[in-house]
Amino acid sequence: MQAFIGRNKALFLILTAFFLVSCCLAATKDFPAVFDEGYHFALIDFYSGKVSPFISTQPEELAMVGDATRLSSYLSHFFLGVPLWLTKIFTDDMFTQIVVLRFINVAAVMVALLLFYRFLVRLVGSNKIASVAIGIYCLIPVTSQLSSTINYDNWILLCFSVTCLIVQRLYTQVLRDNKISFNLVVLLVSVLGVSSLVKYTFLPIAVAIIAVILFFVVVRFIKRRPIKWSVAPVRRIILPILVLLAVTGLVAERYGYNLYAYGSPQPDCAAVQPLEVCLQYGPWARNYALATIAETKEFTGVSLPSYVVHLWLPISTQGLSYFGSNDTMVSLSLMVRDSIGVVISVLVLGVFVAFLRNNRQFMYIMLISVSGVFIITLVNYNYAEYMRFHEPIAIQGRYLLPLLIPVMALGLVGLRTLYRSIVQTYNISRYLWISVDEMNLYQAYLFSKQLWLTDSPRVR
Image (tube, one colour):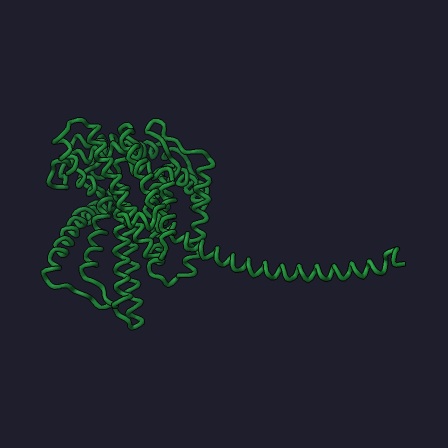
């Protein structure tokens, strides 16, 4: 630990400050905090003491969360039910139980940041860029707010960091030995399945990662460099296979059945539960009211590009600048919000430069592809709701947080490349300018000397 701190004191200070701020917020914020903390605690409280994550009939105490029987994003709530059950053994005070769960969420985010640091150092080969990327992430106002609340977005951050490390390890094996570990592939598929059950919005990320890997394998096969399998002894693959079968069963039970019975990986509440149950779920009741009003009015809306520029981007940027308690949650000043937008825009430019300079680097392609697929899916979903309800709803900048750290690192790599190119060009230009300037000064001296000798009254 001391060696780690000695190598990178800046990172240690950044993470320590972020941890302390998050813990202070977790211990002092009222319940329920922002970002639907009451929703998440209700599910965790129901699962505490339960041995099965499956819910056959809708419990009355979960009416506030809408349909709970076919809910796709349930796994983090089920796992957090264990520490909540243990906490209830020692105390009946609900706020103490909530603070314990908040601290667990803070710990999950801290582990995710450390894993991202390890991933980024291997990706870009620079401790400084990795530290700056994590530092920028920690400075975004909403990140400490989110980490200090009970929310599955914190666990998605952890899941994505683990996924990035596994994919990076697979790629390293291919480059080094032209082999791919069977156990590592099983682990990756299992993590993708678990992550999708933590929050269903991870599905497009999982699909994009699998698609990029398959594309990479096919390209190597076409180039007559097929990848070989590295299979461990039987006794070392039994447990990974059992885990994979269990995760596959969970995914099939939830997403497979939802697609078969309801035609959607996350069915609408009204497709599963009676109207009176769904109306007790706040977001669903809001959408129901908006849809009822929208049916009576004409609405042309705006085009998708206009929606992205004038609504989606400003609202998402504003969502990253949220800070405060549940009652005083405000967006920070316009200057802070615009500063976040400017930083993100500059980093996007850096990502573009980095991709142009490293467009054959598999991890760069993977990260940019995953980010692109996720953002396109999210924008299309938000735009469809905008056209349906006639209002921009459910636009949250925090949904982009899992992608921000690696994307910011790529942006910094691109900006560093751009800076070095500009400096090199500037040095050459400055040398040329000095040379031209010196030549001009010398010519001016000769001209003035000639003028002085010919036109001076004293000479005449």
